Length: 106
Length: 120
View 1: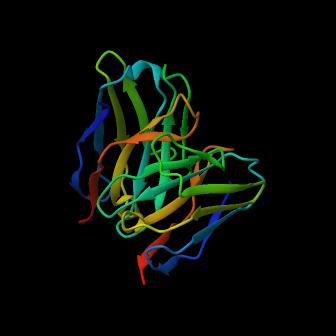
View 2: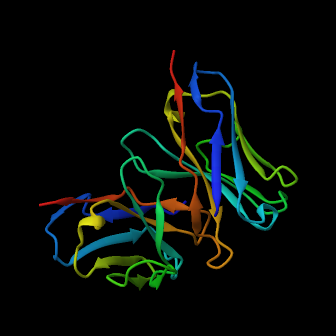
């Protein structure tokens, strides 16, 4: 089974900050990685697919990069609506989520 | 508008059984792969099960294999999860999630979730 490890688990930031979240896979997953955003009490929302492609309707301040085993999600200028928990998901072999990164207000 | 409306959650004793349903509307259900994903209280997301659009191909997470059964009825636009031999660690909000046809193997629409609590 492929394990996904995100860091940090919690991130404190201010509006306007540049934020980066890292996701590491236990083995190579090529570019078969997605990022989701989840707000409290809500279902997750797809942000990024194939490591770096932006889902339709997602603001361009979100970007993804990486391949193989190391990936990043970057929010270029954090907005009030972006305070949420972010999950990476590999889909190279079935599906596995990372444990999540909570982005909270500093 | 795509809608995934779930039913069937609730409180169940350990060892018991429960069936979750997910009624789909706003899209051609029979053309889409579907999944169940769960989230234990205060925890992260865990993929549970997958079913192909025809129902022929099915996958399960190791944690539920042999206890849970995924199925679908394309004539009724519905997805199901039969959960048997339930354990305390199955307590979670269960989401049905649609597989994207634009970006295969990602989940583009999710229902709002139904809480399953396994407790005596």
